[in-house]
Amino acid sequence: MEALGAALREAVRGSVARASEPRWTLLFSGGLDSSLVARIGQEVGEPPDLVTIGFPGSRDLERGRRSAEALGIPWRSVPLSPDAVRSARDEILRGKGLPPPRLLSVQVGMYLAVRAARTQYVLCGQGADELFLGYAHFRGLAAPEVPRRAQADWGTLVAQDWPTSTRLAALLGHRLASPFLDGSVQSVAMRFSWGERMGKAPLRALARSLGLPPEISEAPKTAMQYGTGIDRFLRRDPESSAQFRSTMVPDVPSREAPRE
Image (cartoon, rainbow, N blue to C red):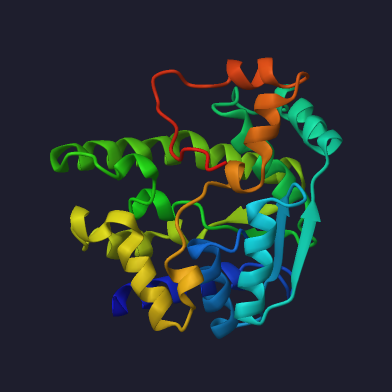
């Protein structure tokens, strides 16, 4: 645990040091991963500009507000409108050098979140669920299947999801980074057994040691596309549902079931 905390501190410190501005933006859901980065950012330098997107009344907007208050860091909310989501959908589907969307709601969420940043340098918590087995599909999975599924998730992240996220950010004029993808953090994560990593237990323990309240340290995983309401909108919007279904990957089950 000490090594994990030290690796994350160095990863955040190194990420912040690469920023060309005094401030940096953190894509903030108010959940465990982004709250850990925010708390460590407070410790190692200038606190981040926390920004949360979501439809009015969405889970992420409410959780982001409460978590920012608990952390004592100023926070911005960016409420979404149907037109804003449709516009982002159209930009992504036009291509702009991007690979075909693997799941449209994820890319739309990342596009809108990065676009809300006021600084060039943007951090996020991507990679934590892959390293520390945070996805819903690990619950109830037979032990022999866990390594295979974890390695498949990691392969998808590094080959598809992360390159697409950084490309989206670059198209919007931003640089995107995640401390959880730092090599030292990955090395420390591998010291934990598969069972010890299950449900992001090491990250939850680290959050408790840093004084984060239970509503953050023990918060259940909710993927951005669900917490913001974007997935629900794209599924139900007559102008978007066909495109949404066409980007679903039939042989890869959803990483997080909607909680609606």
